[in-house]
Length: 174
Image (cartoon, one colour):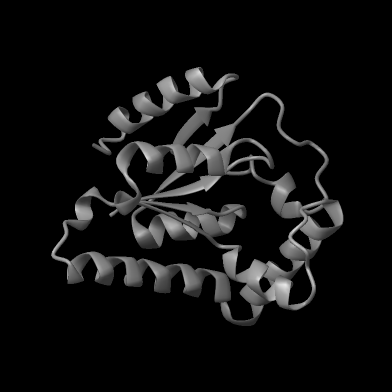
């Protein structure tokens, strides 16, 4: 599997970038995971309504920190999902070398750890009009890492498609 740990400021287009690559390569070749997915599930059980305003973003960041300190839950969940993806492809005798996995992760120390433990590349997605009002340290510290790849999300969907095609070729995803 080719694994990318994805980060960037809020509203920089991280999810859109990954979804467009999935559309380009095919749904059966791209998986998108997040270290905060399990946190959102727990937050929903606590009454979180899915809105990502400043107060809720801080709540999610704090909850993720608690789960990480308690038992490394977010990273363990990611690793378990990767094993499940591997088993799924192997059960159909499919070649996993053509599978691309994007893992959304905010914290620089976790990015470094995931890159080291999974043999992943780090990817920073930027955009000129990203959110700048940070309510938590996870959002505020996204630039505190030396990423392997920097991708500037351009204005206009046509420009984005062109840049994504270049990214796919440069990373040998096809």
